[in-house]
Image (cartoon, rainbow, N blue to C red; front, side, top):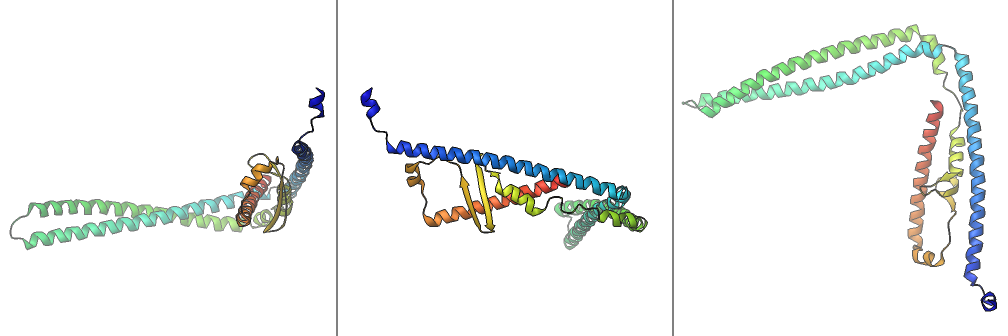
Length: 265
């Protein structure tokens, strides 16, 4: 026992223990910072809700009064798309009808040039005539559909103009009802940038001083041999860092947009 107790401890063990303690301290520190960030986000969210309620109380029924106008605009936009589709279908039907008439003309010419009746030409003429009749029906149907869509669109546009004149005061009030500075872009992005968690659940502390410069610190174990084996070349490492920065910025902006959308709704 005395021999084993007197055996010197491998210095690498002490180094790894110190690094493990440092990593544990960093984890605790990041957890505290994450909790603080969550509290700050909840505080800003609560303030935003209060501002929205105050704006709704101030505006009264102006938003509800202006609602028919915006609904009529949405309906008119939908009818515009339907009218464009109907016009495209009508043009397509006319092209098919013209091609069928051309086929009939060619078949009649083929029969006229021959002194004897050709069964193939007769079948071609019969098929072309049937195609002409069918395409003529399609042209008629698509023309009627197009006229109906145009009529509906005209009525919808007239309704939009009428409601715009009738609800002028409510529209002016509703357009000024957009909540301002509920949560600014800078506030949301700072909360998300300062305390993020990557796809492996590792806490990331990131400070963006410029769009292209970022420093990243992660809590991970240190393995000297693995570091020597996996250490990339300086150029490759720089490219990897740039790709990671672009991915993090894109992810951050997406999450920030989603957070702002959630606050507005």
